[in-house]
Image (cartoon, rainbow, N blue to C red):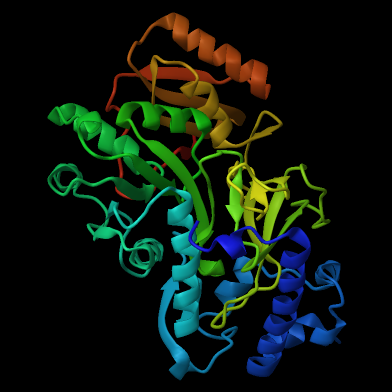
Amino acid sequence: MYQPRLETLPREELEKLQLKRLRATLRHIQENNQTYFQRFGDFSPEDIKTLADLRNLPFITKDELREAYPFKLACAPKEDFVRFHMSSGTTGTPVINPYTRSDVEQWAEIMARCLSAATLTHKDVFQITPGFGLFNGGFGFHYGAERIGCFVVPIGPGRTLMQLKFIKDFGTTAIAAISSYPLRLIEVAKAEGFDFKKSKLRVGIFGAEVWSNETRKFIEEEMGIETFDIIGMTETGGVGLGIDCIAKAGIHVWEDHYIVEIVDPETGELLPDGEEGELVITTLTREGLPLIRYRTRDITRVVSRGRCACGRTMLRLARIKGRTDDMLKVKGVNFYPRQIEEIIMAHPETLPDYLIRIGKKEGKDFIEILVESRTLDETLKKRLEEEIYNYLGFRAQVILLPEGQIPRREGKAVRVEKVEE
């Protein structure tokens, strides 16, 4: 652990710290941005007597953050900002998050915790493939690595042949990436005769996209590494909100910095632990853009608030299932792309690249699923179609393709294509 005392705080002490920091965050908003504070109505920070009182405050959404572009919700003087990052959304006005010096230090702290949870130490050579630019990934990993003293290979995205060369030449022991990128590394490594198992690589830290347990198993077997699922978003301060540990019993969220709620995506009502819903985050230590009850759109559930086998006491979330805006509907059935991925990847013949084509054909719902496979056996096609029907309740046409037939793109993988025929 990077900060053993804080990461193992008893629940009662942790909640006292959360309450203290919640009041301080609300006072910070009140003192620095009256327009923002007026969203809360007739309210004083001292009205927060218990953590349950947080539920009396309104949610904030991504649309509101977009409307606030660039600094309408910022809560520090502009001269205190040292940098900004922005969300990686592909449409609309971007979300800008300005960072003060304190925000950068907070980010470094939680990232050092994440890397330590993923077993990294000062002895590791850490290859960082997310970008160092407006999007936040590369910097967060870099700050955490600096805190624990890793040797950093700051290569950034793409250049897959160079990535493999550096893994070999620099003796890389750990790598960070968006979760679809190791699939590209595996594909190119096979074509080049590169054997990960002859390298020193032992750990992969992957996130930014939903990836199933089946894809995780595929990556671990092909690369001979242990993987860790990291979560976070620009809006809440960047990558590092939480990560799973060696126990693989849920994603630890650093609760001394964030309050977690799970709500019904339709009604906004708080859901009990164990029930699946939308993740809502309140930041407790951010200065530039503190967020109260931010609706992340991510779907998950609280696994436990008890002590983990690793010793940490921070609550654990289930791995992200999808986003509320990722949900697809066909023939009256709602589902997430990850559910299709789980079915596909349960078969050793299939490969991780797939594409869901969904839309209307002659006025009727239409869905076909393109799947790359080691075999184009008709029996496998029928088996996949039957399992999709049995598990998800609708008929889909599965089309098996040889490896490499689905187009590859730089950046996040495209898993859904909406069509009108």
